[in-house]
Length: 398
View 1 (cartoon, helix red, strand yellow):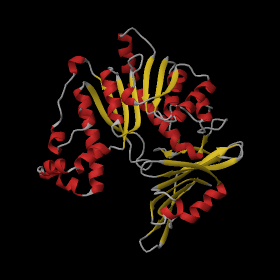
View 2 (cartoon, rainbow, N blue to C red):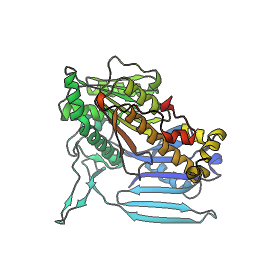
View 3 (cartoon, rainbow, N blue to C red):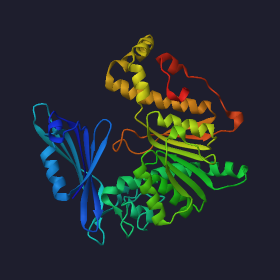
């Protein structure tokens, strides 16, 4: 069964076929009582378009466009990864690779992933131990389509399940320090602000982890620009009867909460939205920050500008990194996050740069985790030499 497919590297036929400049298309299997359907996302440079397909329609769509409208297509089934490639002359090559995901049908006959097995020194196969375990139904995961009613993980949602657990591990690591600081203030629920929460899989996961697994009282507020997304999150909250969890529409740069948050979360807040979130966290003395930056365009645009280029080119060691657009873009992303880390250290935080999820799932996988130091340990650094040498002024330093 097809679990997912990604079509990329569009040809000149895209505008003719779709009527808009599609850069990538993703299809993901969704389980329901009637079987499987497919959720399709069409990406342009600035927008995402959505629609639902039947299994027959999804397979026909891939047959029509893989290697033709799009030069690259990666299909994933229960036990194989199939890559379809087209070269400049239109010749199509198909590559097949076996994967390690084991499947088992649930009571409704749908595929449910048991896990990715690992073999120990004794030769026995073991499953990874997760903070949220498989086999026991978790209400928010069932409602969001990650689990079946029996607690089995839907095969096409296993990556999301692993992402949720990885994030909870990162939260769990910092909880003792955060709770210790809360006790010094007189003890109160753990307060969390989630900026750019989106559909809030991770927000619901953190609430469940704290209240149901760790038995820690918490107050969590999610913020996002999209009104329909916030309405959906509030409906889920109401349907599950969750307390201490709130969602509202708003801009990070204009946000003002009632109380200072203990933890600030910002996942894939685009470009300078991440900087606004980090500044808010610091100015409101957040004890911990977890941020996965995305779309770091600002520094790249500054390096592309003539004045910055002239200044940066005086430092010969940077010249090869600025010469080619694709290299400059990647370099800009790394520079942006490195400078954010430097700035946070200067504001008195202990900073780690961690891998959030595997690179094969997304190139945007760097997580900045920052823990507030005592005031006596604050560094108060100025603008780093790197920014001066490159002739840039990232939003974080404004």
